[in-house]
Length: 99
Image (cartoon, rainbow, N blue to C red; front, side):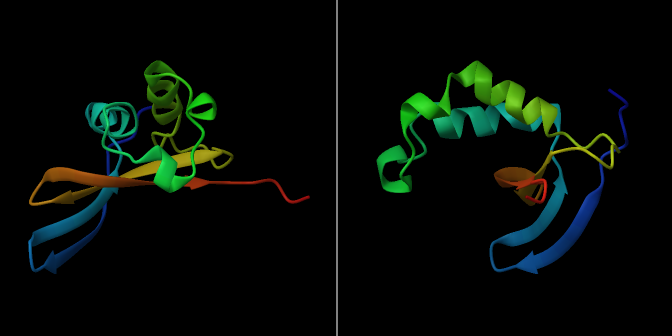
């Protein structure tokens, strides 16, 4: 995997501080894993079957694969959302092939 310098894609002043949209970093992934597997996500409310979610390691590897690497065919790409430099969330873009 080729490593690119991470990019801050957007910065906006918000009532709670400076919000930014950034490339997801390896060090951000444990925050995502903790959300899904540490009790942060209400899976029932979100309509997610825990059997389909997989293990914490499955989630970890899914997000490792979603780190931007400059491949135009990359199927998934993740971005972190930070406020004043602290991780507060993420978004994951999925590319689907046309049917």
